[in-house]
Length: 356
Image (cartoon, rainbow, N blue to C red; front, side, top):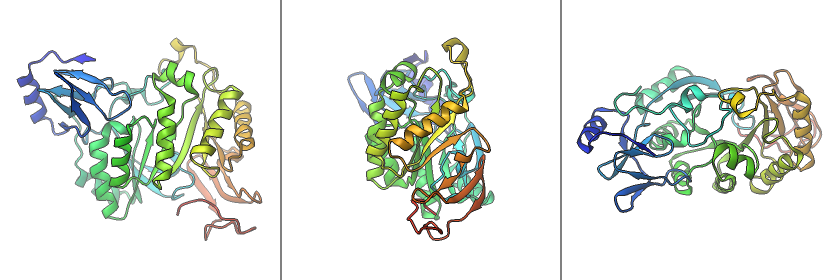
């Protein structure tokens, strides 16, 4: 835990002056401390201190977030970039992120923002109304909270999702899936339509490299599916971390068990970043190893397994699970050709589980 080193009055004054500081939604008082109930870390935070993710601070016995509209990155992204391949293909989502993370991955691809804690004294504030104006200006069909861990923007995401849904836009999350069950329920109730969940490996790898319990992630995948949220799963395939056959088979079987055989599994190629050298994770994932992982997914009964970060590979495309007909041709994040017109394969008539 971080100790802020300022008096309660000084911190409260800074909070009042910071447009991105709002009282947090999920916390309880526990005898001189507050327990954050946003994610499954359940941090107990002393007066003047911050939790593990550094985005929430205890001021005079109340928990405040520093992430409300505190934007580090904004971009009108193809929905395929998330990646979502079975959710409104060919559309764009206005995507924002903030700062910090509740995981400890040494290979982080967005470390420039996810390893930075927000300031209590200043921020890059974007109001919900301005956010919605940008959605329209850039011709987007939906919203996405992404880049760093979006759970940390819970209060902002809820307000954005409610407003976006009222205007007919869809709402998406790209997440490590470690939010509390209460937080997930609040997101769904406010208008969350789709989640891409990054399953980083099996239990031992997630505990060692991420400092987390992967069972909580699988629980949230199950709950989201039960509540009608569209779910896709991504695994960054890292040699020496999650590329052994037993681990990959376990992930594939759990996707089928908790989310269903038609849930897309995106296996993406790893390129070393952040503290990869210190962690000894310096090997770029061989394409042959990715293709082997894809076969494991198919053998486990998954109908849609994709390979990412390999532009031009045939398994960027969507094929009919029944007859193999090429339905959607992609290159990178671009849809080159879409043969789906009615949600059915034009060759054999099979129902294709893609939301349009």
